[in-house]
Length: 321
Image 1 (cartoon, one colour):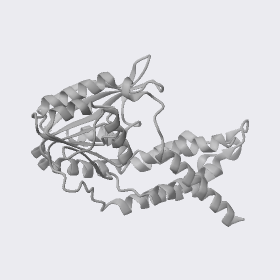
Image 2 (tube, rainbow, N blue to C red):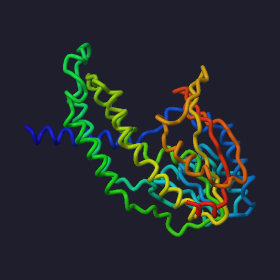
Image 3 (cartoon, helix red, strand yellow):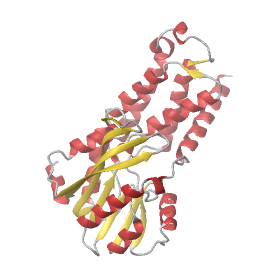
Image 4 (tube, helix red, strand yellow):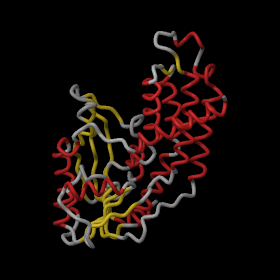
């Protein structure tokens, strides 16, 4: 019976991880981000010479920049991302085809493996199973988070720490890519965010099975407190790779404030996308040649926007690290 239970849990973990990997936004990002895309594209064009080479990191489907205008402006462009299917969608959307001047280069900026994410998800499900209760039960009847699932929570945190320990020596491989300029905007916040995303998928899976997870917010906070300790190191490694791939400069963008609409309440990004805060801190002492502030309407469905800072940094400024 124990082996059957473990097998079932492993199967659920794989299903949840597959769903997470295949996730698609429920927002119409291409149309919703029209103004942001135009502003970011104008800034890139203003900072880069016509006919130069450009590396776009975390390119995705190019919802946040106009690939057609950049292709007309640049001599060559390399789209860098983890999933090649997103670049294929970008090519289709803009009516472009891969060529010598427009290519895709696969790269993993985090270095955390599928096996790592599955191990985390399996252990997370063990914690949630201990915390699960039927609707209507009193969460205080069984005790605190630590009393109910203390050993399982400790094992979850140790699983995360072991994943990060094994990841310390990971070197980002961008191949032989060297371009005149590089673009990285809104990527730092995603480098170390998969564990929190998987948490939401595991929580929904448990709730869809008719159970409620006691202390879900506290558990989410415990996961975040463990992962956030490593965001700065991952960001530093990423920055080093980005600046090493640029001869002239880097268009560097990150979220400064989160804004909840329609009320317009604004707050710091810490606690939401902490990697963005660390991205700003990483360049606080570096020379900025040019910059703009703009609004990134991340999700109309969730009523979330980000106030973005986009700046152009000389490539040599990274030597100050």
